[in-house]
Length: 256
Image 1 (cartoon, rainbow, N blue to C red):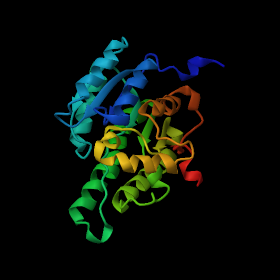
Image 2: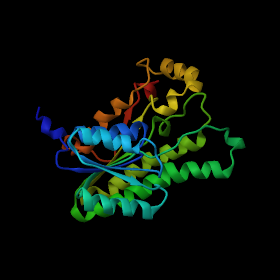
Image 3: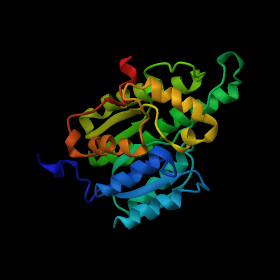
């Protein structure tokens, strides 16, 4: 096999949610594959600098950018600076998002709206900003981080707002993939299963974590490292004939 198919050497990547969890690990993983990486997250994100340090240690260039995915002007400015300092963006990963749970019948509209604003509208605005620099060049690949919760309803978790937002991300991905298929920009999604992010490593969810492990056919939760391979695949020429797919990385969970 020609392993250069998976190389991102000489490419510039833009990653939202790069300050923690899956987004952070993917940002570093793209650098491991050869890309220079712009790391975008909220102002004050404690670990954003750490992400950049890890990228720099790999001999790749990193750029730290602050803003909100709910603000189109923040995204436009971040992409303009990325292109000015690192070069044309050819890979984008949209990982910024939130998660929480609450009974649907008691949920305030503000809680519902915030989830949709960040997880779905934020992904749309990110894709829009990224496509605006990619489409004129007729080249680029966008990867949206969705969730298996966009495909199934998790037993015991009261998260109608979260599930809805992630289902929206999956269908948004397919819709944009079809709009841009003839214009050189591929759009795909990764849907992780239960993953050992900082949110799931908190002591107060230790018992819930045991349930997640038991209900997953592979008998454990994913590590953030296990999201790197799928992201590099979808970012690289190895997936050149893939667009509009939702790549489930769930340890077999949705088979049950």
